[in-house]
Image (tube, rainbow, N blue to C red; front, top):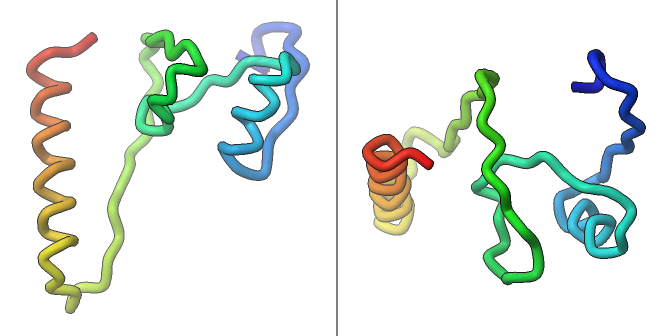
Length: 87
C-alpha cells in the first residue's frame, strides 16, 4: 500500500502505542486479528487481501509444561474454526 499510494505513515515501538495513537485520532492501523484487544474501544474491520505471513510459536524442545500443551491445543482449535468458518 505504501508503494502504490500516497500514504503518510509512522511505526510504533509496540502495539499498545499503536492503539494509543489510533485512540488519539492520529491514524489507523492495519494489524493481524490476533492483536485485537477485545475491549470494544476499537472497530476491527476484516481486511481481506492475498498477502499473508506465517506465525509460529517458539518454545524450547524440552519444555513439557502442561500449560504450553494446553495453549497449543487452544491455538489449533481456533485455527480449525477460522478455516472452517472464514470471515
